[in-house]
Amino acid sequence: MAKIVLLFLSGVVAIWTVHGIFMDRLASKKLCADDECVYTISLARAQEDYNAPDCRFINFKKGQQIYVYSKLVKENEAGEFWAGSVYSDGHEDEMGIVGYFPSTLVQEQHVYKEAIKEVPTTVSTSDVAQEDSDLEVM
Image (cartoon, rainbow, N blue to C red; front, side):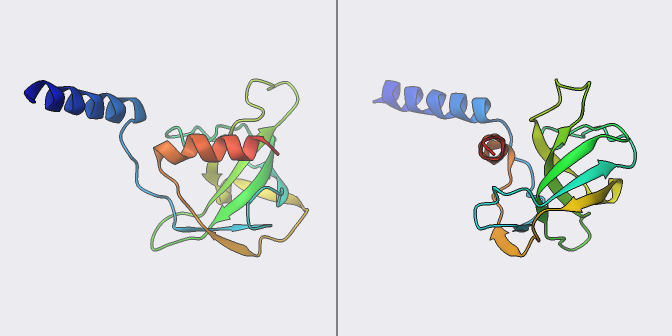
């Protein structure tokens, strides 16, 4: 019986280690163009360089274009973040990577669809990989 419990606990520890430590949620709601957040809301241009602080965010350089897929609803004292992916010639290694970035560092160039659908978020480190893969399908 002790061996079974020990095996179970070591399995739980292994799963926890693989999935990592959970991070705080950035927001509980986001605005999208549709219920599934699959349509591109807008195209924005980076106004300055941004270095991502962790795996939930994307890096970009001043002048790069970013497709915006959702806009997190600002809560309390949190900053306003959007989700998107970089598009830029000469930086193919960054293209297709989806993540969050501060909305204050970009300027929308073209709005494709208005972000009018409010959708609950599920943003933690374990969810980012799933959400990223959902967005990359677009």
